[in-house]
Image (cartoon, rainbow, N blue to C red; front, side, top):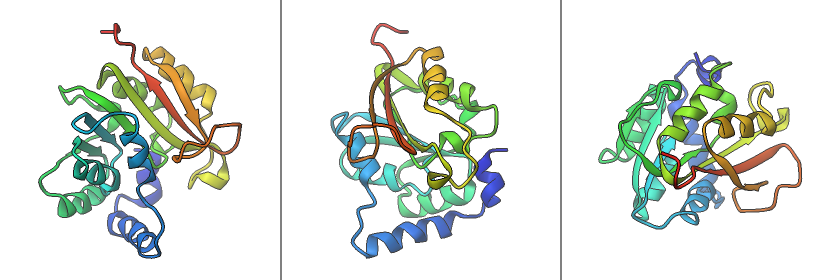
Length: 201
């Protein structure tokens, strides 16, 4: 069972969506992750939102003309996503067992997806996400590295994550401190962009 399900019981969909709706109502930008992804690949590109939750990132990208699918283990989150955007593709699956029979220009794992996986499932999950990329495709992941930026005890370091990506055939292209592109100079949160080499089949 993932740390996310352990934390929420798999029933937090409406509460989670309500939190972001409240932020949006105050004028805060809740689409930073999606805009970041849109700056990396052009409209029409295929995007997999891995750990899509209630669909906030996937829905915005679809509205901008991206070919989007969302996958999540939490049925309560997917219920919200399907209600908001019933025409999009929403898949209930453990990312560690992901096998969609399709490949994508970009796979995004926002919202602390990596440190909220089941303990020990991280390397295999990164391998599955890498396998879902087209040659030349990008894996984008943003997650907390300390207690201030995580709802669970810290368990993943950047060295860990880079090693898992390297083992999966990906190389680090960029690293930022935030979704608005500030350079990473240390700190408790990082956004990493890894690429699958174009000749890696």
